[in-house]
Image (cartoon, rainbow, N blue to C red; front, side, top):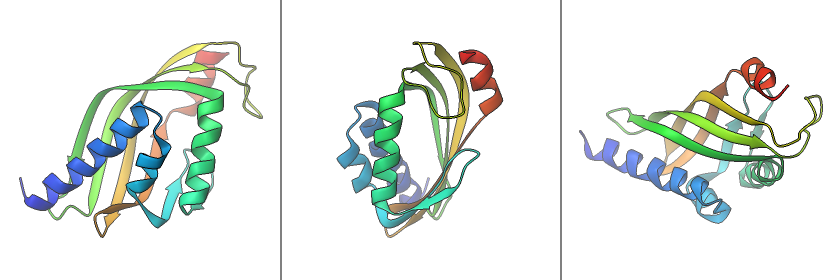
Length: 137
């Protein structure tokens, strides 16, 4: 493994450790100021402020824990991926989706990253939204 891969994997480990404790400041510290966030089956958003707002909405509507985490990094450390399961509880109804009443779900998911200057510059998260809807309906 290269030093660049080690550094990238360490950054992703910090990012997901902060996610696990809902430490938004620590998550944001892992990102470039102009981070691009490709939301699953949605619009891309740019910047830390947009990502912080996304996190606030997510924490209000869902309680999630990630398990079975596997991290990957390219040899040069500029690209990375994560594969995991999302174990969650649907807390607050999201617009256009079934009514929330504490339903639980278990989804396989993945995320892809681009890195620049030792920070995350792009996050693209993917999961099967139809599977999620079926689980919470």
